[in-house]
Length: 287
Image (cartoon, rainbow, N blue to C red; front, side):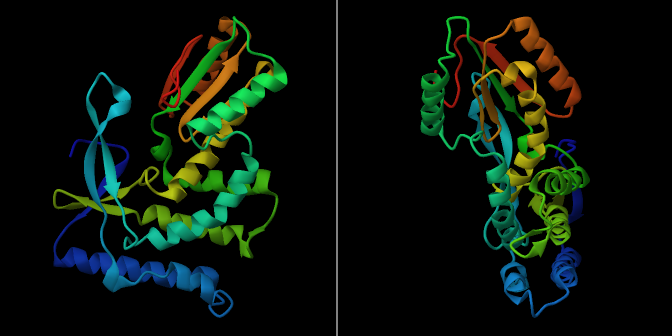
């Protein structure tokens, strides 16, 4: 495999490797008990996340055409995950905990699909009457959305989100420190195999993981705040995001827009932005 900064070779596959992976799973289960400590009080939670070793399947890497890069024909790596992967149950449990908190914080800024985008955009037009002949549309695609940052940065951002925005020490009776420790276990145990070798993610995780999507949303929240807090953006501009695709209107000068975008790309230089603006743009297959 070509050199990458998204994951690293963990080991090769043989009997020693199988023993190694089994021990890793056993360590995960023991760490679950260490985190919750009171196994009687948290027996239901432990039942949801404990890994059944005999049923574990290792995810594998495959490649799909990246149709978003037309007319070029590139391929993008995908991880085949199932309910039998070692981190599946833990990821599902954590995502259910975190989803409510992040959804409340981002209420109104997320598009669920193209129809939702159109409905919100039409409501904005009716309410503010800000669509002018001079109005520009801006789209920003974060191309490395699922691999934004190393795991320690994602974890510190998660803790920072709880402290600055959530303002509560627990989520569904589970303390945020426990949630962060469980999230660390999830991130550091996402392994997959390809061409006879086992790899482990060192940035983000599988793009089809609901928890990775939620952690990416929390991380991107900082960048979105940078944009939304601009004085010009507070003048009733329309703003929203579908997964990794941002859309907003712009009624000020293009020079000011370019300066804001320049500051954003400098501040968040580790994010891979694809930025377009103009009076006519494609967004969510809409024109």
